[in-house]
Length: 257
Image (cartoon, rainbow, N blue to C red; front, side, top):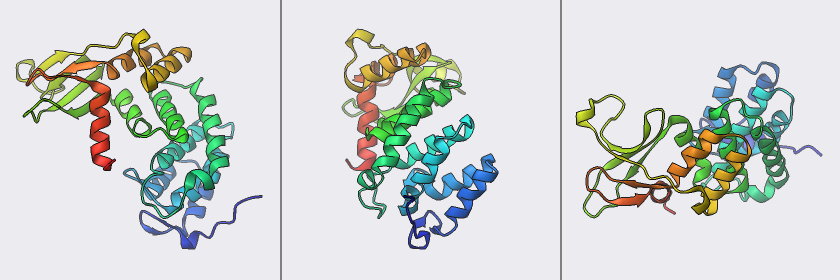
């Protein structure tokens, strides 16, 4: 039986959610990118979620189950971003209980699409959505950023060192850097090579993500993951550190967890 939702009692980034059904209907009839952008802006504004965000999950699950791959992926990535914010203060209660059936369906559909991803970027966002639907904290918000933008920025853990360190994983190579490595002359940027983990030595979420990427034929993603779950050295103070631990420490500090 379809859920009956009183949208007037819900809110999104700009106030009352009474306009959300019309926006969802508009996407159904005309799935233009600007309509999806409007929906993202209302329901997951800069990562923040609201009571209306979760109420939209049934409709997003319906779109995710259609044969239109582009629209299905759009629905899955938005739903994943919404569920990544399930722990925020949003006034929607225990959304993992309320929307358990929808989340289970979305997880199944995301895994299905993952195996036939069109490119690395789509693969990264679908993989992140899978983690979000499963309730994996942190990586469900940070994984795709690093894989698609080919960098993370972390704080050096060295005593007395406040350096902002770029962890570069892609076209420019695999290294840590202090300074804008993309625009500054080489003599103005300090770098140190990353030390990737041996695949057989990976554990936990790192091992799982690496194995999934290999199984899906995403060798470059798998290679990148060995660096994300490997070690780095701060070019300023020479402190060695775990890349994944620093990424995790920074998001934990930001979330207050």
